[in-house]
Length: 349
Image 1 (cartoon, one colour):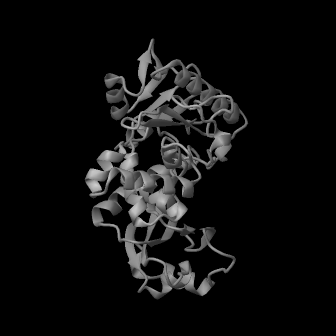
Image 2: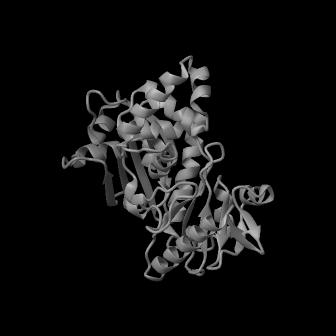
Image 3: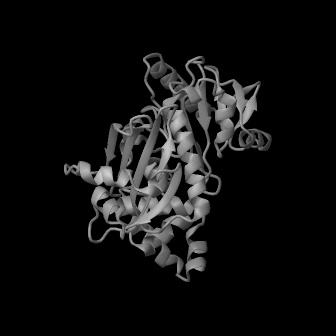
């Protein structure tokens, strides 16, 4: 949720509807300072926190600022709300700080995403999800998504996934099984499935990210993880997100402290534009753009433009974070390059 909201801190309470008391509290991104119980109690009893839904708050709200904490140079917009989490519990949610407030239409989308994230995380442990079919879960996802078995045979898919199969790019059906554009990608798919199945047998949740292409104009990757369904432990989810150059550039710039002038270059690179086109768009010479790119790559610790896309992946994952050297199997190079995970850093020529 923090990645989705582009926030640094989040405070969540599990609140019992019958007693009105908190049964659990989760704090993400905070230092060791604990908020006072009085602040939490006063916030929970405010009228605007009693209904279900999400709403925007800002730094003028003294209680919210006291609970979240805020540095002098931090942005001043946050998101708060109350979400149903089962028959007896509500989640009281507060995250900040954002540089810009969310529009009403965006809050509706975030609310829906929060529900999907919660349902996926809880699996079938909540009564609401006991009868949740994989097909219903797939339809909740905006990106192309597929439910596959241990042989990559497609069992179910959402509308976006079916459209992708019709276009045969970047994945297609091969005798009923999900297949990539070449044998190397197919090997990566099979390897990722084996890893996920092995982890699921131990009740784990290992997830893998693999590239489906390295073409800057049609770059694509897949997330592969265990399907959240106790009745089908052998089923897996394959999700293929669509690239968002603006959001990806902002995350990379935030993670590595890039200024705006360099962030806009990264955005164009993620959009598949060559240096000469970037120069035309930004009213710069091609030589200046290439100088920018070299400087940015040095800051990011990379030595190939394709690695901008790997950073995009590493800064945006819907699953459990994994070590960088687990991004791909050690023996497998990235299609179209000779780079392996252990070389994911800048090397002087």
